[in-house]
Amino acid sequence: MTETCTSTVTKVVVNQNIDLPKLYSVVMFNDDVTTTEFVIQTLIEVFGLGVEPALGLTKSINDYGFGVAASGITEELANHLANLVRQRAAAEQFPLVVEVRAE
Image (cartoon, rainbow, N blue to C red):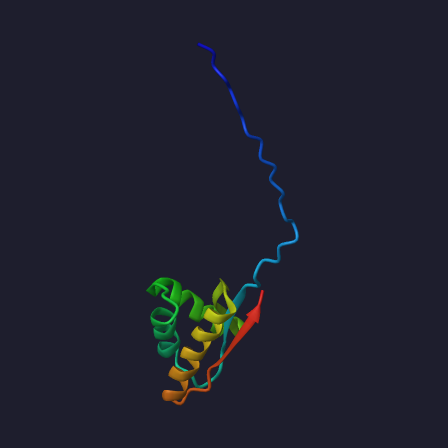
């Protein structure tokens, strides 16, 4: 009995000109009217932060004038989250400023 061995060679071409999608951040800004409690609650309920990270980020927003609530996300998601925060702030009559920024 004779054995026959065959093999297939596949040539793989890697396209190195692929444009990755841009990533975005949601930035919240400090003001003198929006309450700390509202910011903490928003970070927990909208962005899914735990209590301790929400407290830390709220302190950072207060100390530095702004803070990144979410990063490394798609533009669509960033805009959705920012709009949720704006709607919540408007409902409470807070002037909270939220921006979506490309990374």
